[in-house]
Image (tube, rainbow, N blue to C red):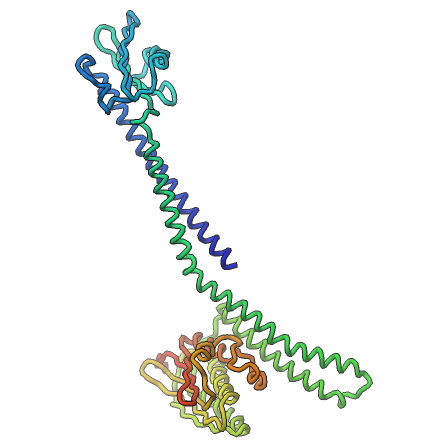
Length: 403
C-alpha cells in the first residue's frame, strides 16, 4: 500500500510539474515566436527600401529567407531577387504575386508558410517581399529541440528528487502503517488465546451436561479468568485506539501528589502480600493541568510493572520530586539485566522482554505503551534505564506551577 501511495505521489508531482513546464514553454514560445514574426516583418519592410542595383541583399543573412519582387502594374512584368534560403522558386511564388498586388492590405499571410509585405514605388511599380516562414533562419525547430531537451532533463531530475522526497515524507506514514499492521496482528494473537481457552472450557462443560455446577467449577473458573484477561486487554486496546484517533481528554487542575500517594497506599498491601519491600517519597501539593484518572493509571502501571518483574524482595522505590521545569515521577526496582536493544523497544505495543515469563505473570505488553501515551497526552515524557541491577522508569511533566 505504501509503495502504491509513494508511486501515486511521485506521479502526481511529476505530472503537475510537466503541465507547468509545458504551459511555461508554450508561453515562452508564443512570446518568442511573436518577437521573431515582428522582426521578420521589419526585415521585409527594410528590404523594400533597398536599392536593388546597389545591394547584394541575397547574401545578407538578415534577408536570406526573403524573396523580393518588383511588379510593373502597367506591363505586368516582374523582376525577381531570391535570397539563398527562400526555398521557393518563381513558379511557386508567381500565383501569389497577383493576390498580393490586389490585396488592400500592405501586410498579410498568403498561406500557412508564406507572408508578404508590399510597397508602391515610382513609375507604377510595386515592390513585394515574400518570406517563407519555414526556412532555416525562421525555423523554431532548434529552439524547440533545445527546450524539449531541457524539459526532459528537468523532468528526469525532478522525478529523482520526487522519489527521494516521497520516500522521506512517507517514512513516518510507512512506520505508522507497519506499526498498525503489527498492532492488529498482535491484538488478534493476544485475543485468540483467551478465546481459545473459553471455547475449550465451554466445550468441556457442554460435553458433561449431567454434571453438577460444583463439579464443573474448574472450567468455569478458568473461563472467568480468561474473560477478565480478555476484558482487560480490550480495555487497553480501546484506550490506545482512542488516543490514536486524537480523542480529547478532559483536563483540569490535578494534585499529582495526592494521585501518586493514593495509588501507593493501595499497593502497600499488594507488595506486602508478595514479599516485596516498598518505599516512597512524595513531595506534597504538586499540581499540573491534567487528568487525575490517567495520572493514577500511570502510577498503577509503573507499580504493577515493578511488582511483576522485580527480582527477590524487589527493593522497590518511588519518588515524586520537582525542579524549576519538571515534575518527576520515578519508580525503580531490582531486576534482571536488560540490554540496550530490549530497553529501546520496551514502550512498543505488545513488546515483552520474555514472552513465556510475561504469560506467567498475566501481562499483555500494553501497559508501558499506555504509560507512554499518558505522558505524551500531558505534554510529558517517560524514559527507562538499567544500571547496576536496577531498572528505573522516570516520567516527567512540565512544571506549570499551578496553584
